[in-house]
Length: 204
Length: 203
Image 1 (cartoon, rainbow over the protein chains, first blue to last red):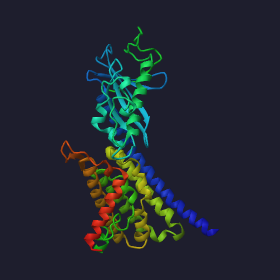
Image 2 (tube, rainbow over the protein chains, first blue to last red):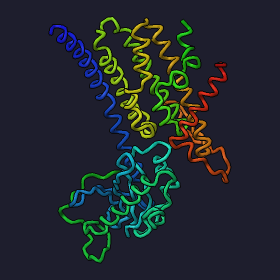
Image 3 (cartoon, rainbow over the protein chains, first blue to last red):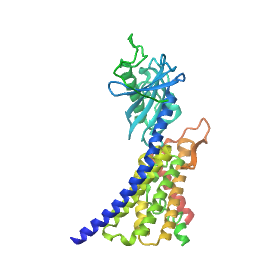
Image 4 (cartoon, rainbow over the protein chains, first blue to last red):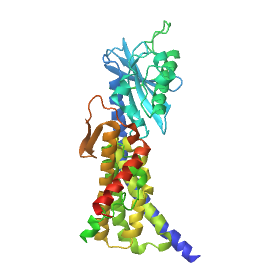
């Protein structure tokens, strides 16, 4: 009995020391990790938005989708495009892709921002040639070649390729049926930001 | 004393001779840079855990030495993971799940159990550096061979210090042997490497 207590206490002391050390390292590295994530997000948004964008406004749709609306001028009179994150279940992780759209909701460019796919196979979804294919594709073409679409999938990583592609077409589907997108025609006359959407903060 | 350092590189190479830590050796070596990154990260954990374990070895009761060793190793792995995510986000993304898996990398627990818990501080540091170097070199060469044959490129760099750059070695018409970056290619490469090592040491 006494022996068990002694062993337990020894182990506890080691665990406490390890815990304290980790807590300290965590508080030191967390701001840096968050800053990295923010920077990456901003770079991704700028990369996928149409080139004419000069003002970025973050907005949340009624269903919780966060979108970034790009305007061409400071007065926010002309919409340059949109960006939003598409999430798809890949082979071993959830793949998050930042997708930029033209005002007509055509894909402008995409950038994979987070994934944990198999190194050397699924990770190729981050390659330029793969991401460039998505530009200017219509919803019908947004399928991998094996499903009859125009997206050439990565050899050995069909699941990852399909996850990215399907998550993007689902996002297009969702945005095009939403009537909250400012500037998006969709046979609606009213294109002003509805009052229940909150303009959180400008990205730039 | 110097033997403790050199033995890990060829004579007792953790991957090629002791056959320890094969899981990361097979899984991440799809590019040369991944091999280097994984090697450096595991080496850091190995050296640090060897240092700590050789220092605390007298206070560790034999019955609970394994949980204590694992606590020490897991702590350093988490430190590496946090520092990597903060300072080399690209590498941290590439290696993904394999960093937390260093905790169960047999080399580290193996060296803690077989060496650091029985030897002095200096010998344990040398053992850690040597074993780490042997592991890193094996992973780097495996990664290089698999990447050249399997993708026709080679990615070189060093975590934190040198940004990785991909060089295209083969011409346009090159059709890479995809098998080499898939798991079977890992086994094939490892087998050939073990064979070459046997030839070198004349066994």
